Amino acid sequence: MPIAKFELGQIVVTPGVLGKVNEVDQMKALNRHAQCDWGTISCNDVLSNENALKTGERLFSAYTSESGIKFWIITEADRSATTLLLPEEY
Image (spheres, rainbow, N blue to C red):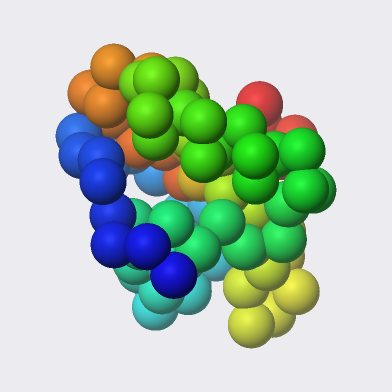
C-alpha cells in the first residue's frame, strides 16, 4: 500500500455522518483514505484515484462503519478540503 502522497486540507464532516457514524469509524476511515486505502470502490475508481495522485484530481473512497452505515470520503482536487459524507448527501 503506498504512503499518502497528498494533503487532506480542512476536514469537513456532514451532519449525516455526524449523526450516524461514530468518531472512531470516521477516524479509521480517514486514516485509510490518507494511506491510499480507498475502501470498497470499483476498479475504475481505484484507477481514477491512482491517476489523480499524479495529476491532482479529486480523490474518492467508500467505507462501511461497524454498524453498517456506508459513507464516502472525498478530497477536493486542489487538496483544500476532505469531506466525510453519506452517499445521499452528495
